Length: 112
Image (cartoon, rainbow, N blue to C red):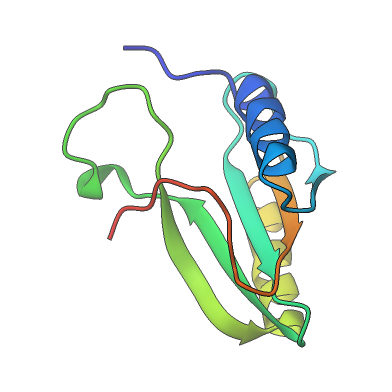
């Protein structure tokens, strides 16, 4: 099954977060068709979490859904920003969604 385009997924996820009352913005626009998507969750206490695309090896079946894995959790915001900068140097076509939520809500399907 083909995966939903990145631009559609980001738009739908932002809308879903808004409906749930979770403040979020698109911070960076990447490739519309296939850009990787990263989500920063600012805990509003100087710490943040970072989620990125789950490695394909951890996904049991390719059903077209986007799944994410934890990259950093409870990290200092500058450390999260440094990791984001590193990811951008590696792939300029990535997307970034930033969420402000003390409870760390993100609405993502995680792979562990």
